[in-house]
Length: 326
Length: 292
Image 1 (tube, one colour):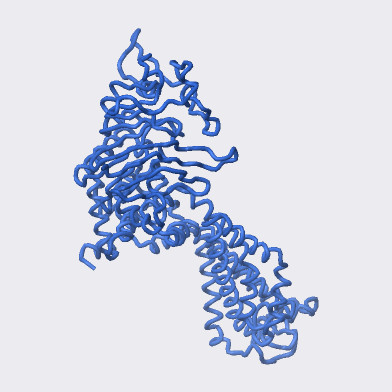
Image 2 (cartoon, chains in turn brown, yellow; image 1 turned 30 degrees about the vertical axis):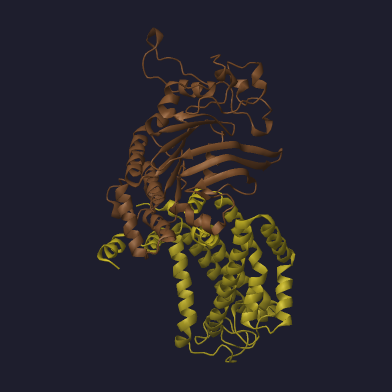
């Protein structure tokens, strides 16, 4: 049994068009010490998946309509609020996309980490603050003791994300969800944050769910990858396998979108690839494959939604690839 | 506390100290603070220097200011010393203002916070309740309260508080609705914080700047309100206050301007000083304006 098991998760949101299905039968699992990359464009349901695990789906309008999420064998859906609060922060933690806004502006970095520690452990304020300083040191903030009394606006973006990571790992969670942790940071800082997350994973055996739209980040971090599109997992497998041999046209498109640095024809860089169109609005999803309208390989069978299947080690939800037409 | 923790506190600038540094930079706020301090000092200790009794009839009525040296500001319609009146009347006026503002803040912030945070039917119920108080004509309602019960200073403060809180509630609700959707609130939930903690420790401190400003404005409004009630003869007749002085002398304003004008100036100065301080507090508690 995996550490975190998500099974056939369905999440609905009430909208003015009626209820729409934001997640439609998502199944994922993560083992201790493993990194699962979840990729997809904006609006694919990546963040909703993460928030569902944390029990933070805004409700209303959101609602978990079915499925199960098990952490260490304990069913999280329908768990009383009190127990869920105990788990949040101590057994599972989350890092957010925007370090500029995910720290409380009126408290110092050290106070915020100390607060997270005091919520879950029976320690005094001074002790918690000292632990916070140690954590800040651990996540690579120089002069941690002095920085601990800085307010978020006095820290750079990279430092703030380090503070967020320190806060998230303060109680050594079993599962760490990183929701686009480096999207707001520049490339050099991004590499440092990845190194830090890898270190933390090695030291604590943390399972990491890394949500991103950046295939480069996946190549760097993930052991396994799940590709999501319009609320479904459409391809899953070992990271190298997916990066080298993507089967779903959408996954192929995402990988083709990684800009190349080298020179192409006529000494100019090759043109940037793109996937035409956008993720369809969820209330307009029909019966068929949600990607069909953007897909170069669309054919008759695509009028019916494909299911995730085929190779158990590298399943894909695509009629075309299942029939090896591409 | 361990040694290292002690050094941390020594190195760290305490939030209050930092707030004071920011406050100091706002010159008008310092002026406001100076004015208010002077007024408070005068009302607390002035009676020891000008030993006159505010309730005693000491001279002919309507003695103009700067005529008789013993009564530099003149006398009122009964021949009572205005200096003594202003000094004695200050404390009750300020106390009513502060108490009413406190009542306003406590009710307003509690109602607004609950409504804004929980939304849904809680918000609906609380806001209809708030609107009920909002549509009551404030002055009339306060008059009814004061008339029904004894016109004591406590009752006046309560009456003002009860009619003024809806605005604070609305403001607090708006701030809470805005802030509760920000990412750091979700982040606080993600580390396992309870609703109560999120409301009071995460959202409220971030909602404070406009609330502090509104609180100081409420002090001003409450002082004016007290003056208004006293002016209408609904103040506590046995306690000297600036409002009461204006109220009891208003009939003779055309013959003698001074018994009305001086308390009026005092009220103006106080409200003005409090507003300046409110502006300074806004700067002081807004960490985004702070620099290293």
